[in-house]
Length: 495
Length: 139
Image 1 (cartoon, helix red, strand yellow):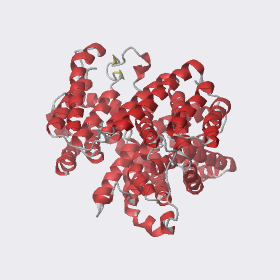
Image 2: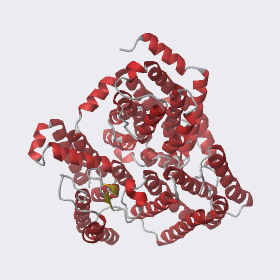
Image 3: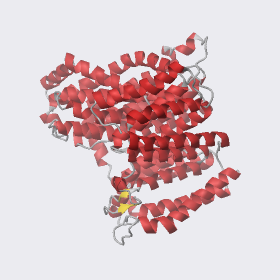
Image 4: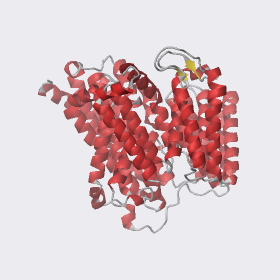
């Protein structure tokens, strides 16, 4: 048990002026890179890690946490304003956020995104601080069979919910899994489907695939529609009603259960390594839609849709640190980057961390809470600033966004090969969009594909290839039944 | 309906080509272990063929096919690929302004101030922040 004195010392460190300044800097950079499609907090964190060498461990790690938290908020801004998610996890925000922006309620939508994001994040941080160890033990009790069943369940729910046709959703999901098999086979280390390009030994770069399919395909569509017009990126109607320009407390409070549900989903999924914030955002969106008295209004500009996705994807951030701090297992790409920052500073994440580095950990917890308030404060200014920027002509926004995508992927993948892959996936994403195959499902299954194959292998070893053995894993059976039910409910019944 | 059937046919064709032409060349077959290198790709192609057939028989879902938009997207994509070639051969400093100018002119931007901003200021800011401040290489 950590002594109270250590906790207070840690919190004191967090509130030092230097730490405070670096958290603010991190949040500002995070919101900026999150708001620019094609950059994102993951790449910004990767770039920033070398710069934290010279800093005190707490300050360095707090700075990176600030970048991550700021990036999550920033990602919602272009998703709402130009339907181009700054980060993959804000793709769900665009579903209701962009229709709101088109109705001239962009201030309302972005403010809802900011407030729900901070709410979800703070909820998740409080869970992290108070019950991190017991939750991590619970997550650890889920073996490969249960995790495999959970993935099947998540895939079936997501395929049925996101796409307007279940079969098209499933095809998109299978394509994502197929592309995830490129590179070394996780079981035997045999290279697969690399077509002579040794750069593909490690698989297709996630940054290239995600940015290509989400950002490039959307930019291409917007460019071809904008041709010859030189319009502002988004046309905000003049003489907007005052109530459309702001978010009232009543509107925020009416979404309290949606945000709470989203924060819970984000926290639970974030505590499980490998599921990630994108899946949390979509699952939260789906549950909000199902719980709503007016589900048909979702996708047409419902504030609950924005609140559900943003509270969930932000809640993942804090919960991701549960397995990282207690077990040393990163739950996401950003957690993996944070773990590398810990190691660089000579700190070994794991069960002994609370005992050996209690002061640092509680300093980090303090920094996370400060970062949330900084997000709220800077977000208020940032939202206004981005709303102005986004009114610039499409010609400047999209040519700059394209250049930033090029440079961002070049830096993330270390060469022009990654940029070429990005353009190819831009074409694939564009074609999939035209024919109604969801690129978001593709991205989710692509991201989880490698893990899925590993879990499939481990599951088959555990049950010795005999499906009847699953009876010994009741939670996995429950999840598989849930998958079949949701497949039927969301797929066939809906259609 | 017809377009949905066409896309389903492509999915079936993709699944079949993977099984018969691509996997035999690109995946080394092993005969031990529960999940072999070919297992998941084969499952995926089988599922693609199955779902493709279902989609062909019961075509569902929205399609947004606009030939003019596709043509212009193709042109913009060609410009992007030429830019990659330019980055590789001439570097960022020379290619980025030309690329931005081409895109902006294609969109229809003719206002000199915006053109100057997009062609010179944005690439300069990227160069300044990436190359000079962050100390990372640009193409």
